[in-house]
Image (cartoon, rainbow, N blue to C red; front, side, top):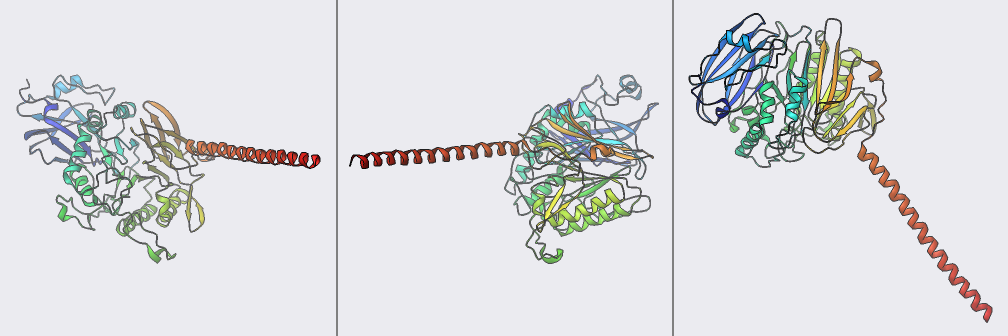
Length: 520
């Protein structure tokens, strides 16, 4: 039987990422130097066979990067970490413990757990999938919300939309960022989620630097370096959708030393294609406030950039490519902060550029478009009826749909309005997004949850929902209006009382004067 260390004594954490139709990349950290055997097994419901095995020597200061390619599309795989001379788990044994009715239930009698993942469908072909998304988790949080996300929605991957922790580091300390990541994955509940499903992750301000951190933050290079180290990301800065004979491999390689970071390779913006859906993720911290737009937009303003020149050119090129690529049917635009919120409002020119192209894709080409954001510590939905961008004193209306996800376990706030649904403030919130893609049509289904209770449902193909007027106001706004009215009434009432006292006193003095005059 087992004569080596138990799994939980050996593995500090591991998480999956960069899942495609034919490959997967994982990162694994152990508590000590170990000799690790990694075995991946394919499953087709009829028979199980060993697919591959990898032996790795691991030191405790760097992750094992596991990369498996030439996998089959839309296929369930299982894998296990074997330490030293653990007894082999045979195919016959797996057949006896696997629950065919529920892919997510898989247990063995050994101390070593079995994990699984499912590859995506072929690029360019209809493929239905779902993912869950949220952001804003307290540092080292052990909240049960991470368990709820997996057990309630069983997503094919989870998108962490920012503020993975709230360390608010404001120095270029590699050790502090190292410790922050290890705190996150030292949490049993967070580690559970990130071991069960692949993860996409984009940092925001509190996990990039201090509150409202931008490109001037002293943490800029370190935050990117540690992102490369810990996060199993796909190709960054990738330029064109890859399909059949189209291939462009010009993208920066992963940087392992801070001295190697430059303006060509820094930044975590990228895209991923799943079936006929493209997910575009922008980096809103690394380049923010570094570039002055000047007169290149024709307004001779001092407005600064949130994207930076290189990322802006990349994003516009990707959106242009989406416009001419017929087989792409859905666009998920990932913005770590509300696209129709207070941060983007400071950068209206770039906001208008993006909105123009997304609206054209949605309204003219009739493709499905959804903006997914977080940061605002609330769960809500905009159907586009009240989506405006303010620029140069003019108000531009864009019918762009946006869902705001979160927060995981931070206190609530409200940062954009009016809303079609919501807001729900507070913690224990996440959103599940399902792309239903068939040969007949493509729809995006949005379901928001507090713990396991559904907050709202939205379907981008439902014209009734798309036609609803946004009338919901932030409760803080309503409260402030009530307070204002009450304060105004009190002030008015007080003013009337003062006038009454003055008039009464004047009248009293007048009466006294009249009596005196009569006596005389």
